[in-house]
Each structure stands twice: as structure tokens, then as C-alpha cells.
Length: 98
Length: 152
Image (cartoon, rainbow over all chains, first blue to last red; front, side):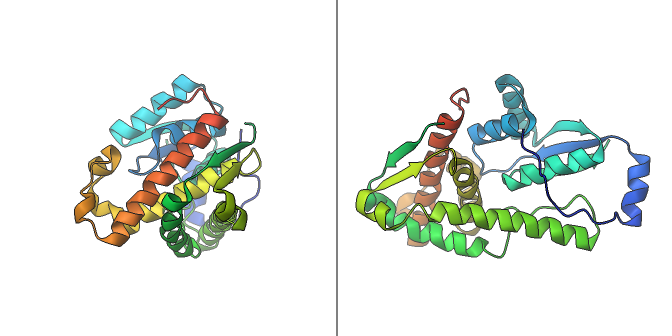
């Protein structure tokens, strides 16, 4: 599993701190893009999250057909690390409060 | 993944390198996909973007390094576990840029099916499309070698 090991970690802004207090669980969401290949997206999801083939394909198809898929949910710090890694692979990934 | 040597037709690929290098130049100061850092704090967002940009430039540098004088002699691209992931990411970045700059007006369905009006396309767009398809083929090849269980 690849996660970002080094990235900026400044103090959160007051707004972010407030949001963090309100939401304990954060979602990693991948949004559709018209360019990246399906096989590439599947490979990235397997590599980053350790998904098996079936689970990675299910998420890829959800992104392709519905425009977005919730890939992971958990603590904010880990969600940020996943989003950063997905963006390194040029996937359109965002973090959302649950 | 073992070391793989991909033999390319130099006459076919060399003209595409102009489009690829132009896209790579465009990407030096900006990300292929505009992203939003998860924190609105400006310092955080700037650091986030700069780190992504540094990684993108490293990947693209590794990719362009494949097209050296030896490539223009042999037509061979050497792929191995040390460079394949960077090349995959670089191909994705360049394809995103080619799409944004030249190909978006063609429509996603046409691009996905490959049914584009080649004869009516201006030369820069035709060349960008050929590079876009070439990079996709290279990505498919690498994905298959990195992870043979992935099927399209």
C-alpha cells in the first residue's frame, strides 16, 4: 500500500479545526474524469488501498457510471494521505465529511 | 514486473514526441488535473500543490528520459520496476493535458471509441490525438505487466 509519507502539515485553520470537531469520519471520494483508462484506475485502487480485483473494479465502474465513488472512510489524517496519493496518480479525488 | 523492452516504430512515434514534449512543457508549472487541497489554509494548499507538482515533474522527467539517443537508434523503450510507475503517472499527466488543450471539443464518446474525424482535424489536434492514443497503449502495456489480473 502506498500512502504519502511526507507532505505539508501546517496547523489547521480555525474553520478546519471546527469541521474536524464536527466530523470524526471523513470520506475519500474519487470523481469521474474522461481521460484515465479503466484498467489504470483499477490498478491504482488496488495499489493504494490493497483492494482485490473485484472490489477495485466495482469502485471504478461506480465512478464511471455514477460520476463518483466513496472509496474509503475513516480518520481525517489518513483520508488526507489517501487523497494526496490518489492525486499523485492524477485521479480526481476529494475528501468529504461524513 | 520483469524488465520489458518495447520496440516502437520510430517513423510512427517520432512525430508524436513533439506533441508530448509540448504538453510536458505546459505541465512544468501546473498540475495536469486541477486539485483542491483538503484544507482551505493557504499555506497548506500551496505546500500540497507544490509537492504534487514536484512529483509530477519528476515523473515526466523520467518518462522523457526514455527518448534519448539510444531510443532514436534502436526504437526500444526499456521498462522495469524502477521506472514503470513513474512512466504510468507521466502518461496520465500528459494525456490529461493533451485532452484539456486539444481534444476536449471532440467529445468524450468519440475519444473513447476512437471514432474521430481525422481528415477534418487540424494538424496539431490530429497529432495530439495520435499521441493520446499512443500513451494509452503504453499505459495498457505497463498495467498488464505490473498487474496481469487487471482486465479492461
